[in-house]
Image (cartoon, rainbow, N blue to C red; front, side, top):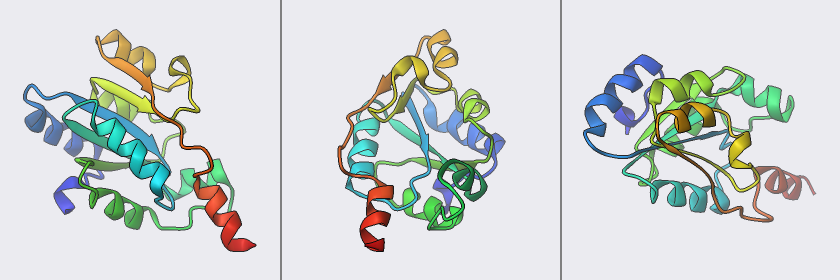
Length: 156
């Protein structure tokens, strides 16, 4: 499982260079704080669009910035290990920048995906991927399935 987790983006880029060999690389990113069925369906759909799925996980600091001081619930290395344990995920890395733009440029994906609540033209990295001849997709949205709703249910 450890070889799936590449915390250094240069190491990830090298691992991808040898792994890609004519394979289609799909990239997505997110917090993935409490893994739920919406995440699983999303990741499986993402993987179906190519051969290798790379997941960029927001660091703990960036999750807190996005979601508030009570998040994330799980530590970034725990989230990375959980993500790496999924059969549909080939590589996992962390990023702490405000957007995954630099990571996307390092990965050079053939397909860039986000959840259905994102319009393709609003997805960070879309111009880069499209400019390289790749595709950008918004995947199926799973209504009523979110980490925030799980946390609210636990609280009540």
